Length: 114
Length: 114
Image (tube, rainbow over all chains, first blue to last red; front, side, top):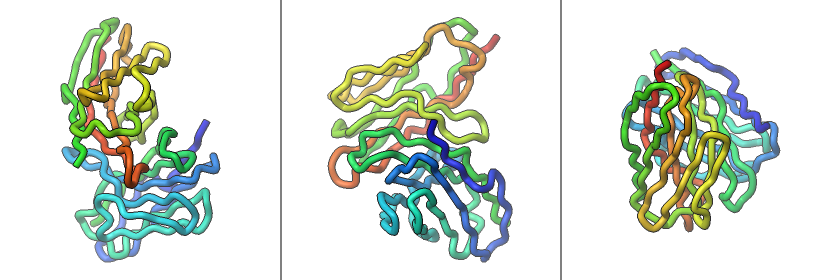
């Protein structure tokens, strides 16, 4: 089975802090994704990566950056956290470059910015 | 811009009933459609993926159909059980361009009563 592991289930940070969310997958997947999920808005794509050191912006990249130095690890960075970034963050991965394989999700990180 | 709608937003049924969840999308130029399950406070679990060339997929008591030309998919759950209670999400992957991105519906909250 595919395993996507997010480093924290719950995280509380303060406004202005630099925040790192980590995601690791164990299936050698090329593609990795970061989404946020908010009530009434559903899931929205922040960034994705299709290879090491490669990244593309999703629908809502403002205020975020990402890092993919190794194939199995994809980090989401909040450069200066703000209260409107309080949300559930979900990481996903998928195999191959054709886009036909399903995305597999981690358990999510519930982030609160005070 | 692709939009995905799920109706109903919430559904409550007695145990043992067969039920259908609906998903519609505005742009039929899709690569595939994926159904997910999400338990409260958790990540997404992939249930079924239907490629654009397929009409349906089955897994156990679940059957998903796809009518690409009309922009519709249904998830049929047979002999529902209390353990099926969860939010069910559908997501489509666009063909062409950046074909990694999934566009999600806002989900149907299913409650199966014992």
